Image 1 (cartoon, one colour):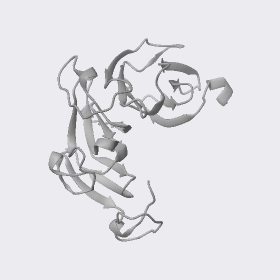
Image 2 (image 1 turned 45 degrees about the vertical axis):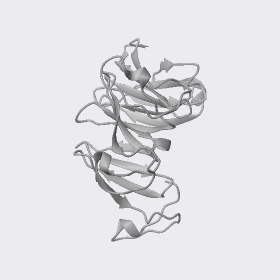
Image 3 (image 1 turned 90 degrees about the vertical axis):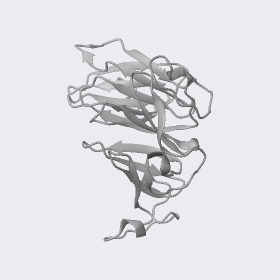
Length: 231
């Protein structure tokens, strides 16, 4: 039950290959881990953050927690339960809580110097272990890793429209959430433009569905003629 597990405002879920379920617990400002027997444990608690997104790699060795309002992301390592107790996590923080901006960083120790502007959902790339994160109000997609790198890889700062292309030559409007397949390709939700985007593992962005205007319309043969409302 919600009372037993301590859930309060659960937002996003992610599961690793061993069956551990990670839950972003917004109101309690923590992440809950649930194993196959429904034993639960608090995985991470940071009193100043409200986590709106969580994603974990299949091995359960890395988890990334996105704080939408605080413009920061935390990467945790490792992310497994050991018996009845979670292993104490080592974390790497990307961005300074409460400070927005548009700053890339590379290399160990530079993660706190990076700046983002309204962090959206993120997704672990199963082929590399890196995570792609939507930097919503900067209108770029970022790639992060546990070595401290946090760089824009798709889109152009402040150029908020959806235009297909490769990497930084493409444009993306307010990427609110991202989900990978197992080949390293990703789907990106652009809620401001009411579209679904497709990003290949090689970094080519295209519009997969949606006309760019709000509405509710199915289309059996051409996704570009379908309509969504802020997906």
